[in-house]
Amino acid sequence: MAAKLEFTNRPRIVQVFSDSLVMIRRSSTHILRNTDQLLGTFFQPIMFLVLFTAVYSGAIKTSGGVDYTNYLMAGLIVQTLAFGSTTTALAVANDMQKGIIDRFRSLPMNNLAVLNGHVISDLLRNGLSAIVLILAGLVIGFRPDANFLDWLLLVGLTILLTLAFSWLSAILGLIAKSVEGVQWLTFVFVFPLTFASSAFVDPTTMTSWLRGFAENQPITHIVDAYRSLLIGTPMGDSALLAVIWLTVIIVVSIPVASWLFARRTT
Amino acid sequence: MSLADSIVVSKLKKSYGKTVVLRGIDLTVKRGSMVALLGPNGAGKTTTVRILSTLLKFDAGSVTVNGHDVAKDPDGVRQVIGLTGQSAAVDELLTGRENLVMMGRLYRLTKASAKERAEELLRQFDLVDAADRPLKTYSGGMRRRLDLAVSLIATPPVIFLDEPTTGLDPRSRLAMWDIIRQLKNDGATILLTTQYLEEADQLADRIVVIDEGRVIAEGTARELKAKIGNDRLELTFTNKKAFEAAKRELHTTIIATDEEELTVVTLLKNTDNDVRAVLDRLHAAKLKIESMAVTKPTLDDVFMSLTDKKQEGK
Image 1 (tube, chains in turn blue, red):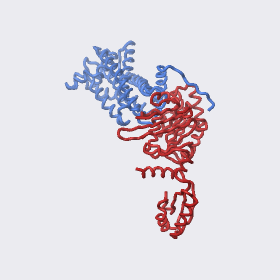
Image 2: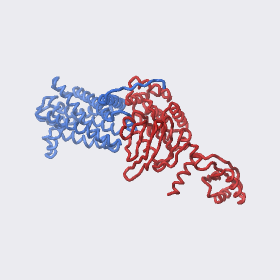
Image 3: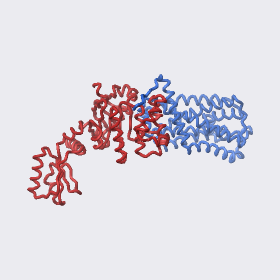
Image 4: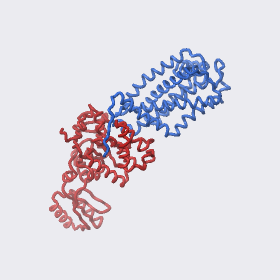
């Protein structure tokens, strides 16, 4: 017990950030060490890419005669990001089921840092898998015509999308009773949303009741915005609607998640 | 409350719906001393520790830790406590060193201090060789040691140990006892929960026995033992028949029997007279004794006696 310990003396608001940084580092280390999951995040989108182009490109006629590989990329990126964000739910549920959450709560740390850590590190990993997906797309014939500004907007939209879905996903992780439950919960949540959208086919070809849903749900607006930025299809008001949807999701889900977290842990 | 008291719990009550867990616990721990909270499963030990370490809200009563009110100033409490719970509260995917440094940073240690202290603890807890391995490769004993090390990273003056040796093999348990004794020698205030009477006897300055959410006895190990009579007499018989007959003959004073060893244990209020009386009765009944011994009561006897008394009073 020789060493004299030194404590930092930062203002409260700064502590929220420094605590979150510690937790981001923890969650990112988890991602890097969990090699099975890591391989999955890279392999799965590439598998989808290869399967979809090989299986559907002959069968699906896109509106305006856009090449299907070009058409598909926006949908695949959004689907990958949406599914990728659900690992936040897994990570949160994992923490909640284990003794470590008690440790964190008995420390003088900012408790929301736990959720911040998972959400932000998810953002880093999702960014990586989006890059891998785009590179793989380029290899099999994806030809974007986005300019520098378009790419910047795509990066911004990707950050917004991942944050929104990760925070939603944090809520699922907090309400789930078990880690297995989380997997189901996220599946039934994300799967219909991404498939009943403009991600893989033009919604105008869908059954009328589904079409009504598909044309007005956020994933379609998001996919349309991505597609327009990537390959120059008409933008319309899709980017605006996407940003509004995503902002609303973030603004609502952060306080809901915080509240659930505080409630679950007492 | 005086400054000499580090932990002061008064009339603490807690229920989950209709299930009453704590029925008014009073408890004080003097600065620099170790108190054992002793009780069977479900007595309310863990609930008490969770309340004291700000993890759980309570219904009534008051709790202060080093002068910080747990209800009003939980952050103040968190600055001064270290908690080692029943399930190892460490990160499985991180290495031992990473766990220590991370928790140190969350205790708001500077980066240099956290690293320096982590090295110190790894040495002290004999974990240097395993420091860079992820925790999922650790044995149960190593994990507990790291868990305890983590709670000491910021040298908190108050330490809560919730059943620190449950599930450990005998050797790891002894090692853990040494570590806990060392913590006390270093001046920490310690509240330990345990269901092992021997553990409380070995480590604690004072023992608080709780059962069904109530304090049923407290004092030093010696005082508790004194409470239920001074000595006991162990009698072993040569055959089953004599053993059974002796059980009938002495049944009012018997506190334990062992069918296999053919041993009965009686409680002595007044050693001299009682031994003579027992022997006279056995002699009159012509029951042959193989061996006999007068022994001091163990904490197990204390505990049995205390919980039995309470049940009779119902």
